[in-house]
Amino acid sequence: MVLIGVQRSIGGFGSPEPSDRADGRRGRDRGDVPGWVMITVMTAIVVIALLAVFKDQVLNAVRSAFDKVNKSGGDTK
Image (cartoon, rainbow, N blue to C red):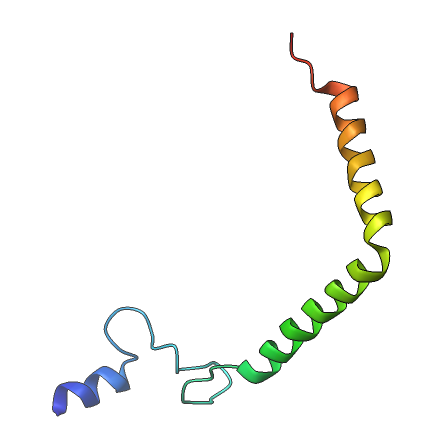
């Protein structure tokens, strides 16, 4: 018990706990997990919707880019 009190009063042994913050807040802040999940899902939906509408244009752009890379410096012989 005394050791725990001493450890907390001097800031711990080794690195400080992640719950000790410079702004005085204590406790573990796990972030806004549901918010990140929502952003990820919404981003995936937007990408799928764009690919569904512009599939041919995206494929042509990617093929063109690969063709330009292959023609410009792909040969090392």
